[in-house]
Length: 369
Ligand SMILES: Nc1nc2c(ncn2[C@@H]2O[C@H](COP(=O)(O)OP(=O)(O)OP(=O)(O)O)[C@@H](O)[C@H]2O)c(=O)[nH]1
Ligand SMILES: [Mg+2]
Ligand SMILES: [Zn+2]
Image 1 (cartoon, rainbow, N blue to C red):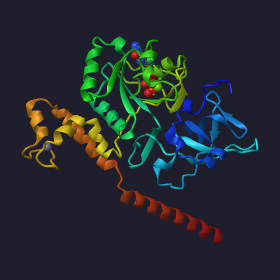
Image 2 (tube, rainbow, N blue to C red):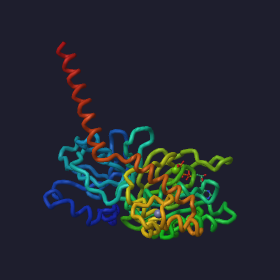
Image 3 (cartoon, rainbow, N blue to C red):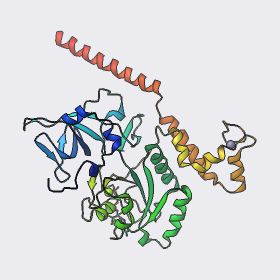
Image 4 (cartoon, rainbow, N blue to C red):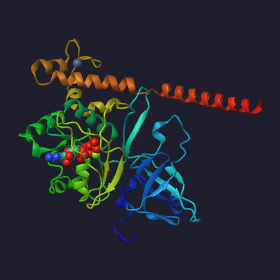
């Protein structure tokens, strides 16, 4: 090994993961972290040799994804940031196999695009989420709230990063707008290309820390990665001039090691960010409305025309923006619509099981006849 500081802790391993592995298992398996997901393959790194193989950040190893055993369970599959236990093949010709995936500290997901209610995993075990947007016409309160709600449900800490401050007449105005959406979330306004940006975002990028970049196409996620990495590790592209929209330059998710010792996950700009499984966590992202609602006369107040409604009173008094209440309601309705109940999930699993059985029988019948 060339870099003595590259150990499990440097990869983001903590007591949370350690406590999931017993001594016997620790002696026979090797922990490895997923840095990229491809069709039919996972790219992993590990400070420890895996059998005869090594899987260092500059030469990650590809392994086959684990059999989940639950074809209906979208969350069982491995995603970027996950910790896996690999076996230790003694034969140099065989690749290590995934023994199991460890439980996640945080999980960032959305409803997959399309009509199904399936869940798409974006990243696991992320400590900090950089919600990236720009100081231009692309800045959008509703989208910002969506990301804040997703952060709340993921368990990762959000930081709002506002890029292109160098192009704005009054970048401070964007910072004020962002802060109004979540007074407890830090806001950083910067030029993603400037060398001092690495220092500004340094507190979240230290050894073993994992940060994910999320935001629309063209806001400068890959630019931030390159600046923080001190190198061009990801391609960037100019945005369209007429509407400041990006060109979807980044197409896959990948985890990169930073010189500061942290890990940065670049993601493609998302066209659609549908809520799912957020539930009560939505109230974390709308703490102002949740706090007001506790003072409504009725516990199940819908803040419509009920007497003693503290939310409506705040709107009348001008201290709550009615547009914000509307956006909150929209997200809550969307989340309820997209979230499969346990009963629905079971039903889908049974339907899948029946379909598989019918297909098997059909195959056997053909073979027989
Ligand atoms: N002036 C200025 N330009 C920036 C800044 N951040 C990004 N850019 C430019 O914005 C364009 C888009 O940046 P990218 O880093 O490709 O954006 P992205 O978020 O990765 O976009 P996708 O990969 O499409 O999701 C590039 O031309 C960058 O040079 C900034 O802070 N200031
Ligand atoms: Mg990009
Ligand atoms: Zn009310």
